[in-house]
Length: 503
Image (tube, one colour):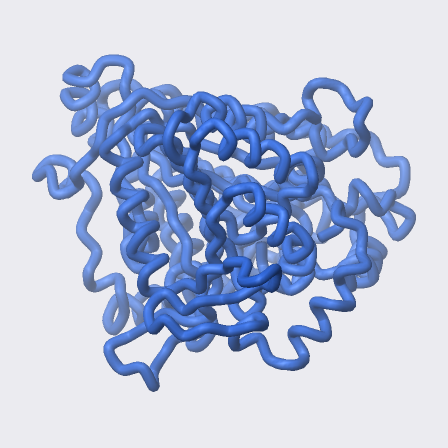
């Protein structure tokens, strides 16, 4: 999540935003045309490129990890440029910054050549449906919907804080990207200062159709509203053209000087096998959209966290090792007890989360801090990320915050998606998690995990009953949260009194 969205003052700003929404109190469910993913027909470039590969790997899907922000961004642009039928995007947040503008312009170009574009964004991050979004929505082949819009300033606070956190980028119902990245500069290493360390995965084959089915469920849900209903009146045609012209100019300038010059068409990459795909069986665990309507222990089955159940099932089958990478890690007593049971039967549990210095959400760290001692006493190994990415020139360290959500069991099962190990992911937000049964991918992630620990983490241990932080790169020891500073420590203490479910 974005750093300004999880902290407690959200309740005040959310009420203010809700008061500005056009949806009246007591409004009926959204009435909109139901549309569904277009099925592969075997005639598109992507279908032809993938058909032979799928035939050689029956029942399996193709995967490629996207750890580098630049690669993850260029892959998205390449996918849209390869689109011939459809582009379906589902995101918690899309920003109107450099990255957002390039992606939105690529969608307009696809729509101009007849591609159907469906864009679903959580209402909390729709930025009031600004002029750029309205300009896109005015295109005959583009529709934008907002998920779970605020009804009024009297909206129930619980439902207001329950958001769609899913992230899916699907083209032609043939290839997709899922993972932890939202669509904004800081997720692709393009922000001038602070950036996120994150991970996506490129998919092809049957798992993509599962992602499309989940997308359709959200798109056609009564909780998804066309933004034209929420933000009338629409822009005049002249204004629409002006906004699109601005995006076109921006695109042309970026193509001349930026990352787009490195773009290789996706169909070319597939044909020349420049994309090495790991083929494996996989399944998708995705929450139902109705989950955001409930927030109690007696809620119906659709509110039970499917990613949490899938993670528990896979981890419970592990015999040797469980790796957890979660940017926001709040295990609560139930999670601590569950991890203890794994440790007690010989599973090596290793956890990487943000440090107080690196987190973009101090409140989340405050929720995690009380459980550190119990985790360590119960046998888990605990690491916290440094607040920067090390470079060859140490005086040019780049501010960095961990945003990844990854889980690896026994180096054979990889779980990746939007799901954090915290109450918000389990109880409040809708989430998704891919479970991929691939020793090759799981080992690749485990190796990255070990490299990150060695270069860019502090190991937290108990020394005579006191917490100690060890810089894994230098061996330097700290008896307090390293590099956090006075004010972060103060804020962490203040947030510690808040209810865990709101962290």
